[in-house]
Length: 99
Image 1: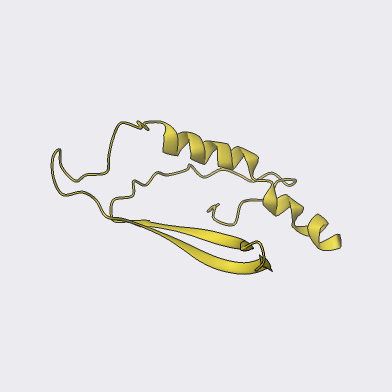
Image 2: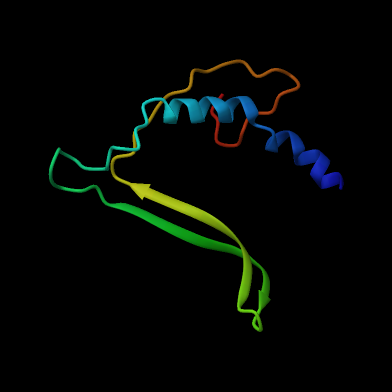
């Protein structure tokens, strides 16, 4: 319980999460497919799953529960910048955020 209370501020990254999602999805169109030019040369996107922990295996029912990490790799990932800002004393930055 103490560990949960100590790390709880690191989990609450609401404003930054909303900012990242709005930046990434601002020009999104589900009609566009990933190609380098208009007609040919499709972009290769690698999608992988890393098993972090097996939680439960039920051989009788052929059921497995696991914690997984999703890996996404592409040559042409668009990048964006988040402006630096001062962190308030009661706010904790996300682990991937530069301040």
